[in-house]
Structure formats: structure tokens, C-alpha cells
Length: 563
Image 1 (tube, rainbow, N blue to C red):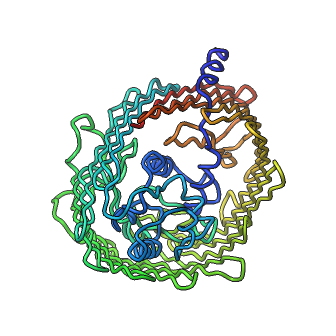
Image 2 (spheres, rainbow, N blue to C red):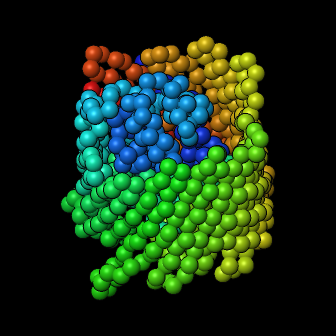
């Protein structure tokens, strides 16, 4: 069996440049490491890798909805395009106000600079299919994504889980000109302000860097996730000079017959956002309604006012919201600013018990944007970061303090990374200390990585892995072996692992055992056609646990065609 997997992996290779791309995504999201992300984030960035955002062609609505840029960066880019006609190189992009060389370098895989203003880019197709096998059985998925320049795109995704109902995502988006920003029919995401009133999908929890204090609202955007997340209905936004109006209607009954009987999250009913987008800031007002479960009557659920301003590197933000159902207010405010070569950030938040967190995704630590008051301090200088976050829960009086320190150093072919976090609470388990050290080596086509992770909460837990990789232009191969000893669930250790694009693997290791994984990919280009194939094979066993259990095997095969 292992020989067959090894031969298949050698034919396929490993995700080309995955280390580099994942590191870029982590920095762009303001996260400390890959363990803080989720599958939706990787799916969104993977879609941008296949269909990069055309900075010289995209409208303001599309630039905002991509989630890569702040409103300040979008305004600055549009002003530069108006004056010069377009961006000709990444070096030139780095000279635009609000952009800098490191940020542009991270953006590179997800943007393109072709085309002239007023022209439409070429059409693109992406077809993806996969089969995954685990202990529950086979999981089959397929997805098709079509883009017609910068004016239209549509996507359909279908997943057939073992023994469960099928789920699908279907979306179509038309991007207009002049006053019409876009119209979306089907699945969409809605993210406004700092996430206090409305932020669907993934939002970063915890404080790991100055960038993690800020949200990048994308407004209304289409959703092409494997899973049906966000909302389903009709959404549109319009621009009138510096004013933007967004409206959406989520329809709970609008879903394919194949999902009948599947539990569905509360529907987003009428939503309206009005924003003023200035050169150095923005102000927005968001209101959303909710239907009564018994009578079906509509009522105003939340109303929020948010603002953000940027001036000479100082970024200030605030949002206040009122929950009409619980009659509770909530608010947050903060500022990120430079101090010499160091970037500092401070933020305050207050979310009372009873404040609805159903659609929220604001800055938070240990709750879902409810029953939490907190103060966050963070600083970053080069590759070194420190953050301190204190939380108080008004309803129970519980408190939590979390400290995070991280850094890295590079010398020749070697890179060293370390991360220390300490969490203190007023109840058991009182503390959770997590120390992680990574060593990476790369020379030519070969690379290697090693990690040692120690966690102490109720007992001492240990995890370590060794990984070797071989990477070329057409493909690569990675093999990882992991050992773990975790005797208490409160001491569980999370560890990010390689997988096919758009999939997120961060298992929580518990027990005493080992894990093996083999990941590979192959890519080939023909005129007008690109093929990528991926393989992930894994085996996890717990032979040394107090109560040994059978090992678990996993297999994923994924094919992607771009044409």
C-alpha cells in the first residue's frame, strides 16, 4: 500500500510554493500563523490565484469586495489610475500611497496588472473535482468557476458527503459601471464596518499583531465556498460619487431540492448599508432585519455606525451598534500607529451579555462577540511581534489575560521561528502555556522543516514533527512524520498540515501516537490549458495511549483545470 502511494506521489509531486503562499496569506490576514485561519480563507485566496484581481480593470466595487485592500488603499489606487492610466509593474504599485514593498510582494500571486483602463479582461474557466476517503466513507466534490473579464463571474460547487445530504453553492455576479457596482444572485457574503453588526463567514479571533485589530470590510461579495456559508438571495451595491449604497435580501427558502431537510442558519432578511468613502477615511451606517420565528413578522434587529480614518500611517477605527431585540448597546474603538520602526496598536471593546452575536464577527478573544469587555495592546517590529489581551465577562465576572510573543531569524539556508503564548484564567484550567519552535532549511530543490511544540495546562503535552520536501517547477513531494503525547484534552495541540488547495487541515492532537502524511501535486501547461493534480495520503495511530484505538487513514485526490 505504501509503495503504491509513494509511486502516485512521485508522479504527482507537492503543492508548488505552498510554504510561500501560505506565509503570504497569514501576513495579509494579520494572523500569527496558519493555525489561526480556516478553510474559507484559503478557498478565497485560491480562487484569486486562479483568477487574479486585475488592478487596472476592476471597478471600485470589485476592489472593495475582494477583501485584499482597505477602503483607503482602494481610494488611493483609483485616484492613481485616474491620474496615470494604470499600474505597469509591482515596483510602481509599491509607490502608490497606502501600499509598500512588503505588502505588494505578498499581494503578487493574487493580482494582475494586464489591460488598460476601459477594456475588459479575457474570460477564464476553472473546473475542479476531488474524491476524499476517511473513516466515514467517500466524500465527492466538484466545482466550476467562470469569469468573463472583470464584468461577470459565476460559480457552482457541489459536495456529496458520505451518508449525509448533498450541499451546494451557486452564485452569479455582474459588475457594472458608473452607478451600478454589482448585482449578486445566489450565495453571497456580507461584511461591513468592523464586524460588530454584520460579518458573515470567517473572522480572525484573538490578537496576534497590529493588523489583527482591524477588519477589512468587503461589503457584499459572491461566495464560492465548498460549503454553503454566508447567505443566499439577492444583493447589490451602487455608487454615487463618494457615497455607496448596499442592499441585500436573504431568502431562507431559496435553496436546491437536494438540500431539503438540511439545518440552515438564520436567514439574513432586508439589509441596508450607506457609506461615505473619502480619500482618507470612511463612515458607514448598517441596518438589518430579522423575522420572528413564529409569526414571520419583520423587525429591525441591529443598527450600527462605523468609521475609519487613515492619516500619515495612523489608522483609527470605531463602531457602535444597538441590538433592538435585547435593547443592548455594544462598541469598539482602536488605533494603529507607527512609532519609529515599530508599529503599535491599542483597542477597546464592550459587548454586553444578551447582545446578539448571530451575524457578528468583530474583534474578540474568548466569546462570539457577546458578554465580553476587553483591552488589547500589540506591537510589531520587523519579524518580532508582541501582544497582550485582557478580557472580562460582565455576566459571570470571569477574567482572562493572554500574552503572545513571536519572532523569527534567517541566516543562509536556515530560518528559525518561535512563538510563546500564555493564557491565564480565574477558573480551572487556570493557565495554558504554549511554546513552539520551528527550524526550516532550504537549498535548491530540497527543503526540510522540524517543529517542537510543548503545551502545559493540566499536564505537559508534547508534539514534534520532521518534514522533508523536494520541489521543482512542475511539482514536488512532501513527507511528514509526527509524534505526539497529549494525555488531557485541555492540553490538546493544534498543528497545521499540508493539503490540497482550498482545504484546511489543522487537527487537534490528543492521546499518544504518531501520524504520517504524504502530499503531492503536479502541474502542466498547454496552450490555453493548465492542469493541476493533488494527492494527500495520511495515517494516524494511537498505539501508546492508555486506551489504544484503531488507526485512521485518509486519502484525497484533486484535479483542477484552468482554461
